[in-house]
Length: 202
Length: 273
Image (cartoon, rainbow over all chains, first blue to last red; front, side, top):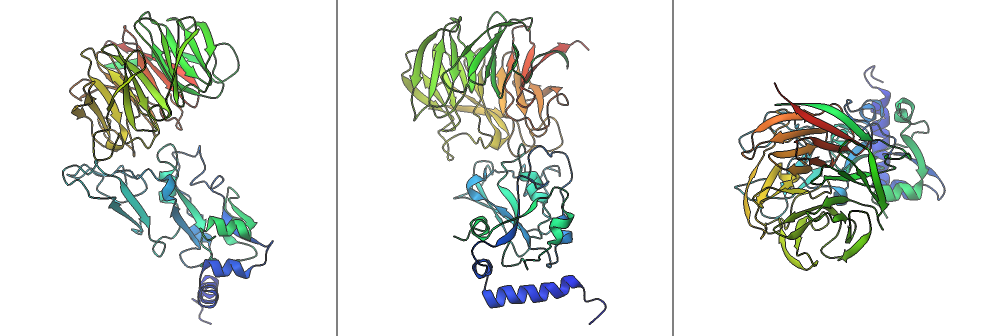
């Protein structure tokens, strides 16, 4: 084995191959688990990036740096039913960047450009504020760094963006590396059925 | 222009003059008495900040306003309760369609205005409670952009309604009939003259000037009617998690701001410089 071949690489290959190829996605992964078993999930009420009351602090990116899966098995997810569909979304824009000639912040927040913004319906060319906007997160790009989650939460936003473990990526370690590192004990084990609900698989 | 904090009223607690779990609206009457819509009650303080009286509302109170005749209007879910100055219930207007969540109440030309956060509009009623027209709804978005969940407005001496439209980072001017006359304000993330975040300003009071509050970070500011920032009244005193801080101004120009986390009303006065 190459000296540059890390445990993360090994688990990434093995985990992604086993989960994606053999089971074909998160639902398959969970269905494989017997009723009554547990899976890891991020508790948004504990996560530093999403828990209320934590304002004015830098986003925690331990889900990115500690997970054994490449990029991380954790992704940011926008719960659209809770999203304000704002013209200026603090999770999309760097809201302290210079304002451009359209009256919008000139920089995006996401370092991996994983969020796209598109008008809902016909945009008003004269006034971009005169519209709702949809914010979509590309999970292939997202590495779960939590920056958008921190900016989206109350009181700045509505808390529609949260971090979630994606079961088509998670390799289900017995001792989750993120849970060991998380200062808020936000990685919890939940019943498979709850994991399915949280993952949007019913 | 600069402001200094001169007093704090209330605070979280069960004692007299304190607030239990919520402080959503404040108003000042013509004699300087301060009214708070807190929990499921109205609490009244005199101009010196002493507790005068309080009475219960049938539901949690989301807003309060005092009419020229001394009647006290309180906005709630699906209704407005109207009390006399002593707290005796006079009337209740119920309307599930037009009074979703009433987060602001005001008066113009003998009519009553209700800010309906559910409908994202201001509803205009006559004094009998008969609906007359909407304000802020005749636009492509069918209403004001209020992801913060509050519609708020003030009425100037000429009967012009100044409504916050936080999703657009503006304060818009309307006639009582609902015609949009113009706006002040723009987004800016670092310049105090602009409105920051996703959606500001959240709350407003109008007298000789336009007084607003913002969330994340919470602050109170005052603008002239041309939209020029005259002063940041205060920022650091408010809890960082505050949002939707109701603001009121009395005849002496004292500014009252409700901290929705500390459950306290901060009072500021302009100081000569």
